[in-house]
Length: 258
Image 1 (cartoon, rainbow, N blue to C red):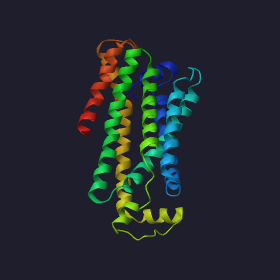
Image 2: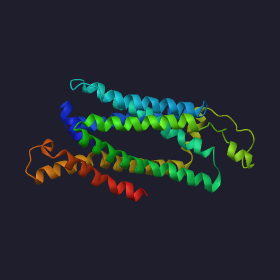
Image 3: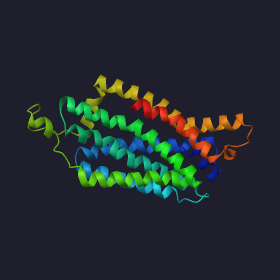
Image 4: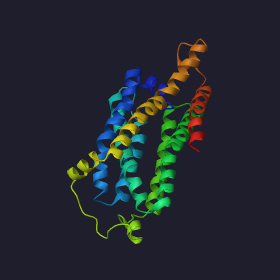
């Protein structure tokens, strides 16, 4: 998080509690992801995704108004951010898959997953720059909520709910009717799919490493520069300089994604 040290100072929390912010996010995300997938298989995915983004925007914006003596509320809202993110992270690929087939589908999914590291790096850079410009970490967080509102409006206005399997059905690649199955049957089927199992295990390892790196690296860089300058705290670093440290770290993520 680009403003983690500012949040730690504001709430008076240590590194363990700072790490708990990411932990609670991942726990909520992990629990809600299969639920959102279940709902997405049975109900209108566009509106589930829209509600999820609205929840995300609310939680992000509300977290910037939590007073310094109510860290537990900020922590809870961080978890709710995970709920909102689970909705569109899980459902979006299925919508893309039902709009395209063959190479076009692979290409569109490539663009979608390309946007994750690219957008994350871009968001961190914008957030840290806005925080430095305003002198308040809260505005660095609020600007991401504004971007979320823009995305929500675009989805409601321009995205249509595709027919499930419609793109393939038009080409005669699958049967006209798809056999319904229960949630338990779906889980059993996935557990016997070794490609899915090993891919999931590998991706879990990647998230473990990359998640830790993106969460703590900016803070570690700030502490390193403060130590080199003989400062007692990262608070003594120039705000503009702190923003440059964060930007210099996330810029490679953005460029390498491209």
